[in-house]
Structure formats: C-alpha cells, structure tokens
Figure 1 (cartoon, rainbow, N blue to C red):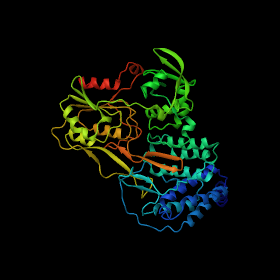
Figure 2 (cartoon, rainbow, N blue to C red; figure 1 turned 30 degrees about the horizontal axis):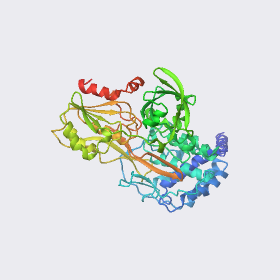
Figure 3 (cartoon, one colour; figure 1 turned 120 degrees about the vertical axis):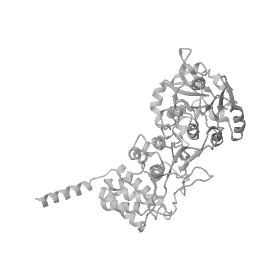
Figure 4 (tube, helix red, strand yellow; figure 1 turned 60 degrees about the vertical axis):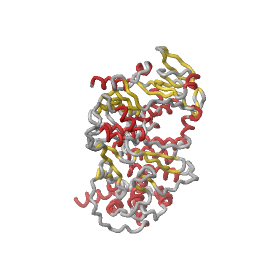
Length: 547
C-alpha cells in the first residue's frame, strides 16, 4: 500500500511540475535570475560577459519552454554555459540591516527544480569577491555615491523592440531590488509590482502605455526622489503651465503664489482663489486619475507634486471652476510654456529681528559666508526662527558650532553592501556636529517645516533638532532624506531614487515618515485668503509664551 501511495505521489508531483506556465511567470522568474546573476555570479559581475546579449539569447529559449521542468532546464543550461563558480571562503562579519534582503525565491519559486535552486544558492554563497562591473558605491566629488556603470544606452532604442523593452524593465526592477535602501517600506511588495507591470512591457497597447508603465512602476517605490522621465511625458500631460503655484487643501487647489504677476493678471488669478474643477473634473477626480504618475514618499508629497498632472495641458487656454469671495464662477485661463512664464523671484531678507526680539532666518537665502554676520546680528535675541521650508545651503556645521554646547550625533546612515547585493550595513562613522562651546546660543530655537522640506532640507531640520530648547513647528516633510542618485535606464528613460538610508541616532526611520513636528500647524484656505503665514504666526506665538 505504501508503495502505491508513493507512486501516486510521484505521478502527481511530476504532473504538477509539468503543468503549463504563463509568459508572465516565465519572464518574472527570468528577470530575477538575470538580475541575480548580474550582481552575484563571478563570471558575470566581473563584466566578462555581454550580459544584455545573454538576455537576448536566452529569451527565445524561455519563450519555448512550456512547463516548469522545461524552464528550469533552460536556466540550468544557461548557468552551465557561464563557466565554473569556484568555492570561496567568506569570513567577513558585518552589522547588517536585513529588512530589504530576501533571496528566498531561489528555493521557493514554483518554476525552479531542486537542482536549479541548489545551483543558484551555491552562486550566492560563492559570489563575486572582486570589484563589481555594473555598480559602484563610493563617496567622491563626482555626484551621488551609488553609480550604475557600463550599461549600454542603445542610441537606436525603439519601443517596438520587445527585447529592449524587457531589458529596460529588467534593469530598473533589479536596480531597486538590490540597491534601494527603503524597499521594505513600499506600500506594495516589489515582487507584486514585477508581476503587475510585466504584461504591459511584454505587450503594450501603445508607446504611451509602455512609457507610462515605466513611469508608474517608479512611483510604486514611494520615494519623493523617485520618478522615471521620458521625452513623451509632456506629450501625454501637456507642456504648458499655469502662472501660479497652488496647494491642495481639502481636495481643492488654492492659489498660494503667482509665478508672474503680469501673466496671472491676464487670467485674473489671485492668491486665495479656490479652484474646484479643471475642464469639468473635480480636483478629487483628477487626483484619483493621476496620482499613480506622481512621485511622493507620503501623501503631502504627492499632493505637492501633483500640480502638473492637474493643470498642465497642450492647449493655451482651458476652463476652471473657482471660488472667490464666497462666489463660484467658471472662466478660461491661460497656460504657457515653462520658458515663457519668466518666473519672478522676489528678493527676501536673509534674516531680520521681529517684534519681541525674535530672530527670523530665511534659511534658503543664507550662504556660508553670511554665518558670522548672522551670528553677530542674532546672538542677543530671545529666540530664533529658522524657516526650513526652502532648501538651505550647506551651513549646518557652521551654525552648529554656535548653537550647540557640545558635539552631538544627529543621524545614522545605511549603505548598500555591493559585495553582497541586497544587504545593507550601518555606516561606521556616526555623523556629529557642533563643538564644545559654553558660550553657545541660549535662546529658543524654532524650526519651520512642511512638505517642501525634502532631502537636504530634512537633514538640516534633524541637525537643528539637536539644539537645546529646539522646537519644530509645521507639518510632515517630504520623507526622502539621503542622496538622490540619477541614472539613465536606457535611451530616453532617466530615473532616480534615494540611494542611502538616513535614520535618527536611535535608528528611527526618516524615509517616508519625514520630520514629525512638535507642534502641528497646516495652512488653511481662510488663512491663505487673509494673507497669513499660519506656521510662522504659530512660531512667533510660541517664541513669546512657550506655548
């Protein structure tokens, strides 16, 4: 009886393993194997193989495979053709951060035979020990530390070429898989995104469908630094802008600034106008349709960056519904090419003293050479408000020497380990600022933030949080601290993402969360209409009474 059951089990197992498989299943598995070998296999990661060409050669064989057994055989033969992998002794012990790391698919993929899984695992355990050919991570003066290298750009790239479409998609997916430090924080599992978008890469309905698929998958990583751009993007959404800045509040677009007073006057646009519809669609409807194309680590970032997806267009005029002075009306307004906006940037004081002996610093306007004069002007104030809602220059170390009584750690960093792709290590050197200074500034330090504070701006807020008596006022920041690496996936498709992790000294994440204010204040429609800066007003009140 036992023998009969064993035979039946073997028959059922063989039948299950030989069942037909879909093209998406095969190509998803191929994508993962191709990327894994690119960064792990000693005879591939050293650049000795034309790895793009290897993909083009294996794809027809993958297409022919009609069962998991046949697919595994194709991949095993491919591995054999790459040459011997020698056993190496790995003794390095590192303080790994492994929330991103998961090579369990090697053993769990339903298309892989035990033999194939064993060979892939052996490659992981005996991975390349020399310099990587396709990726580097090193700090220098030539840009962000993460660099994707030696990738052929394909000057003759055509979207109709299935092989090149798959190559571009496979490259991007594996860049994120192995070198995006916040992969574990995505709303959607990265494997699920692979399976979701592959059909649109395999057989796109049009060039637009392929282009937007490449854009959409980059938005899935939930990073304010991340988006894929292509020349046709303006063709799809329009290359003309309105001459005003808006803020989305309660699913309405409120005019908060004019890019050009004269052009805004032509369309009778005024600060405080509440735009409720664009070409007959509500702002809520437009956000629902287009937010999948808009980068952002969190909701405030998406709302901030969604202006072009709501207001851009190809026509020079379009219709809006808006509210002014409590009355709803409909009118046509103008759009302009970006270069024709002739954006006006009004001059602003770098710092000043407000009523109550309160210093105010326009952080974005202060340069390194200004710091001694700033200190001299504000050293006797009762409080200083640092407006960190615009990107500041790199002046934190100079300011910290004055503001802090002693050196203090304010951040920890997470770097990719390119010798073990997908794994991350805590940077050994902790970031400290300040010096021993008993004559440091003794007044209150108040930091203003909102969704416009991203990356270096968030880093500056983190540094200011270490100052005694510091208080952060405003709303959630952009949630994308750390260097932004930009790269070309293939001709016509450029992209970017945050390339290392930034944490507080206690290892609390900044990515996606951003800087959390001590006192939350958000602008209101009424406040904007009344010409108020409600975040600054709240800061002044706190500076005066500590509440």
